[in-house]
Amino acid sequence: MNELAHQVLAERTVGAVDLPPAEGLDRALRHAAPAEVIAAALQIVGRERLAVVSSFGTESAALLKVVADVDPAIPVIFLDTGWLFEETLAYRDTLIATLGLRDVRSIKPLEAALLREDPDRELWFSDPDACCRIRKVEPLQRALAPFGAWINGRKRFQGGARAVIPVVEDDGSRLKFNPFANIAREEIEAIYAVAKLPPHPLVASGYLSVGCMPCTSRTSPDEDARAGRWRGRPKTECGIHTAQSPPD
Ligand code: SF4
Image (cartoon, rainbow, N blue to C red):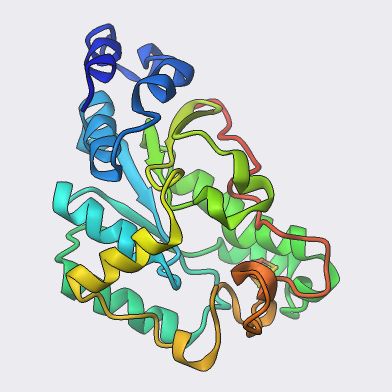
């Protein structure tokens, strides 16, 4: 960790309400390596208050590998929407075993919300934002309740709203760490190659980005990796990164 990061951390006080401002941390960690960002997050909030959120998608193993190298007991939250590919569920289990992840929490939507708002399982078609809200956004907010900060794997090279993400940002009542914000696609590939990480099973079938079944399609070589998500719709994000955490 660089000198500025030490300086910012030295000024912290303990407890969620006294967390250092995200802007200062972002300045300190702007050029830090992903493992340094994760180690800094651990120092700031402690393991009990820090979570990783992972989709166990096509690039997820890279971040999970770096996390596991820092501390394999950091809780990992996985949103099991009820619409995931079987291959993704299997990949989750493969990566748990491969990386030795000790605390992966598979979070499901509330049955009551599904019965009330999506009894016919057609909400993904009629109102995908509402579907993402009950299957992803609200379950994540519940799952993050005990935590003071969370880590995710967004990269600037993914473009769109992600092109300008900082390394550390405010997320309402929490800090959000984006340790891969600066990383290049080639570096992700290098992490897979060096650690011999297994690819997501659907990559071989032409899926470059994998989410829920009804909202994921294959991409052609000339397309952006996320072009297959919500194809034909203006939607590009599920909402977990655009909704801020409500106050505790
Ligand atoms: Fe529903 Fe599609 Fe969102 Fe999954 S990605 S929660 S199926 S709208």
